[in-house]
Length: 149
Image 1 (cartoon, one colour):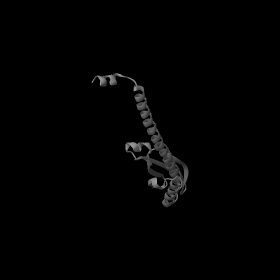
Image 2 (cartoon, helix red, strand yellow):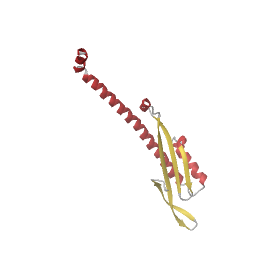
Image 3 (cartoon, helix red, strand yellow):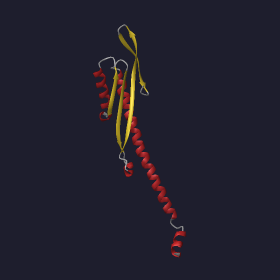
Image 4 (cartoon, helix red, strand yellow):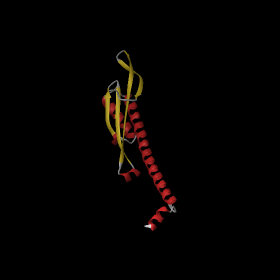
């Protein structure tokens, strides 16, 4: 009993144990930052692809709907996101929107049982037209921040 009390009251080696816990905490934080950074970069790249797709598709809104869908699919494919294209909505001579979704594989969070994180982006573009006779003239193509209800 006295020997156990003596071992617990001694402070030799306590700094080493404390340093080990601090290092473990720093490694966990660094791992979460790296995985969070990977998710953030994937979201930015997916948003760029969505923006490019709707801006390119909006230029075709005065043609046939198939042309709009083809341009959107081509731009998304060029941005390496064909598997992530979930939905394309076209309102001819007015608006095009896309919805992209992707699962981002995680590295360090697998130790916590989290294999992947979902990334979900939406972009929309619409044209503003002036009517000159029978034919609409595209005045502006603008990127819409949020979907209209």
